[in-house]
Amino acid sequence: MSEAVRKVSSDGSWEERFGYSRAVELPNGLVLVAGCTSMVNGRIDEGGPYQQTVTAFGVAIKALESLGLGRQDVVRTRMYLTHARDVEEVGRAHKELFDEVRPATTMLIVSGFVDPSLVVEVEVEAYRGGAQA
Image (cartoon, rainbow, N blue to C red; front, top):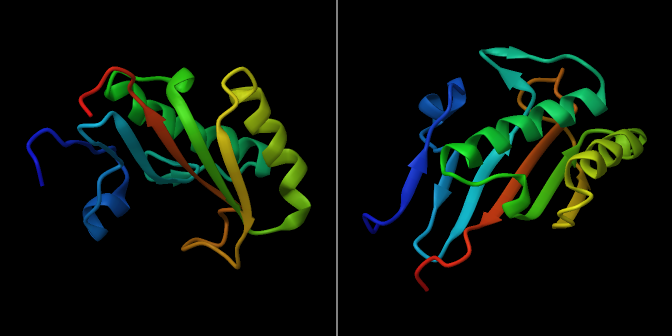
C-alpha cells in the first residue's frame, strides 16, 4: 500500500485483536471508517437504540477529527440494527447529527453483533476535497 495512505487507530480492543484500523484515508481523499459501536473505553454504553447510535457515530466522528475532518465531510453512512422496531430511534439520532450534511445512507436489519447488548453499529465514509486524484 502507498505511503500516502493514512491509518488511524482508537482505543478499540477489537482493532488490535482482529488487525484493523479505525479509519483509513486514501490518496484520493476518501476516508473509510470501520464499523463503530457504542463501546467506549472498553465498556458498552447500554443505553437504548438512540443513545447507542449517538455514541457510535461519536466514535466515528472522533476518528474523522483525528484526520482533520468532521461531520460536515461525511458523504455516506450505514446503520446496522438488530431490530426493525429501532428504526425510528436510530433514524432520529442520524437526523440530529447529519440533517444539514445529508449524506447518502443505508439502514439494514441484521441478525446480531459480537456482543448481544449492542443494538446498532455504524459505518461512515467521508471525503477530503482537494486531495490528489
